[in-house]
Length: 150
Picture 1 (cartoon, rainbow, N blue to C red):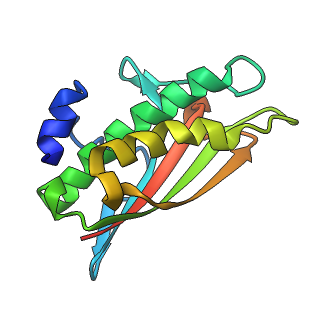
Picture 2: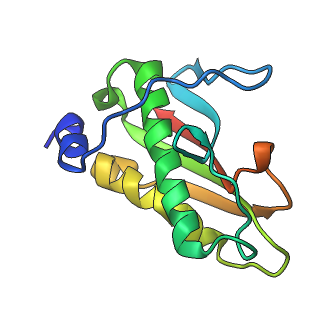
Picture 3: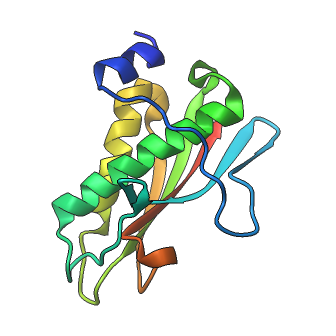
């Protein structure tokens, strides 16, 4: 099944690339690798604010990570022209705005990892890191970056 059909079946339409909030570009390609800048969680077009373990639970954080994956896919499509060109999703790096003692960062970032695997199948199996941090830009709950091979 094509990636376009998979996205349609999942009810996902990819957003346009967001304008960077600071002095960086949304993606860079070098050789056969495409590096996507970190994308923060958004809800209703605004930063999805919250801190895991304080005012947000793991299930909600996972939803935020899934929403980021959709934004990342939109940026990746803009970077490569067609998601079918992606040979492999190489790595995700997930940052979770979390309270001291919160330990489910890996479960939050699964929201993105699971969607990437659904969309790309075997090509979506990736290496990953998930970290808890004291704060993220604009108070966002989650931020994720992605590296892909084309």
